[in-house]
Image (cartoon, rainbow, N blue to C red):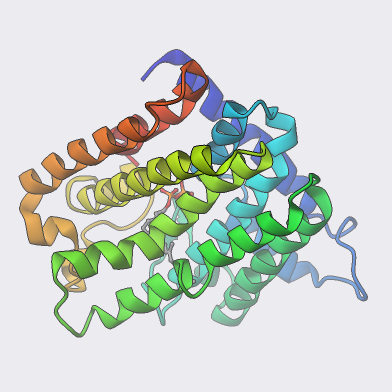
Length: 298
Ligand code: GRG
């Protein structure tokens, strides 16, 4: 990893943190009534002070390939991050993964209660589309809204979560696991890259290459996530490990073994880099991020 990548990632994370902090402010939230203080606090707990902010980083890097500044792509990245944070809050609930720790801190339902955590997730989800509708300006606003909705929705993240739950009680083959993961985790990564490219007015050909990159990067991200669940410590990961095996969850690691999954991870990063062959140095940020996906330790 180069110094440049680390500083770009840190700068993006700081920008996202500041933007979220400003957004989730009782005095600034607009609407027909007054937002309940406890709910806003729970939404802040679930979205501030933590997280690598990788999806906004992908939006920023993809947008920059097409000449869009970091400032002009920030709020689109924030919208994606709001969706991501909502999904983590709901995923941690007792009815889903039942986790006590996230990002090194108590999960939202542990710090508050289940009902508040459900509503905090709902609030972040709704805010994401408000941000996109009001704070992201360009010629293709509705295209961006549709992109985020399809990545986050039934044929994307939410549908993938349902497939994951179904997979706890029936046997899945490698293709079915890959398809489930492409929806559950890959779809939002795919939308992040595509939204960045769309902000920059990418033509169909460029968007196709960006999409191929994003799909491979999403596979690499998930493979690394499954490997970390087996090989990392809870301290390093900021959440419990060994959850997949405990729940009898089928992953590519359980199917391919550690070595097989590591080999596939290397091949997948190679696929991601190959998809960017038609871009020059302006795509180096995306290249570094794909490599980081495979080498990350949390
Ligand atoms: C509940 C609607 C709903 C969806 C949940 C994405 C998802 C679907 C659940 C998240 C559970 C999980 C741990 C999935 C593995 C991949 C993943 C999204 C890991 C966390 O993403 P990072 O590493 O997290 O980007 P940070 O904390 O850095 O933001």
